[in-house]
Each structure stands twice: as structure tokens, then as C-alpha cells.
Image (tube, rainbow, N blue to C red; front, side, top):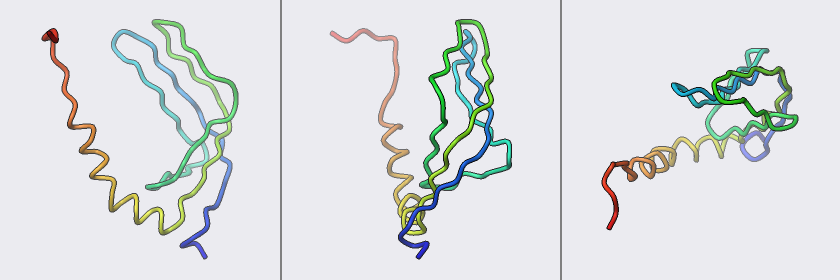
Amino acid sequence: MGWIFRSRETAPCTVSISHRFEELSAHVRFNNGAVIHPGDTVKVQGPEIMAPYGEVVEEDRMATIIRASKLEQLWTRATGDFEFMELCEFSFSEEALS
């Protein structure tokens, strides 16, 4: 039945938000050692975290991990490269468009 159905689990996590000149990032670290696999979905519970400019904010939260079914994992692995290539189609330059 794991081929069709998704499972759900809850995990404690630490959310780290960096809003500095040299780094703009958001990371989630699972405190119980949970591992995310292709196709899984993670939703961090609680209100939005805002880091003031120049600071890094860390908060402990709970996260809900929705595990992909085996079929979804296979599909994600098979098509993931195509989605990555979509990102490669964009480029940035300093030229002004006319």
C-alpha cells in the first residue's frame, strides 16, 4: 500500500533565517534526525519568522513531514532533472532592456 498512500509525521526542528548583506537564507534542521526524500513535503508550524536586516534568527518549531508514496518518489526522481533544467534557462545580466 506504500505505493499509493502518503504518511505523515511530526518532527521537532530548528529554523534559521539569515537576513544579512552577505547571506539571505532560510534553513530547517530536524532535531530528531529525520531525513527528507524526493517528493516529500515539509510544513513548519507557527507564525512567519521575520529577521531584521543584519541579523540571523533561530527558532525551535515543530514541522509536519508528509512522506511521498513510492510512486511519487519514483516520479520525482524521474522528472526532477527536467525541472532543474527550467532554472538553467534564466540568466542575469547588467544590460538594460530596450
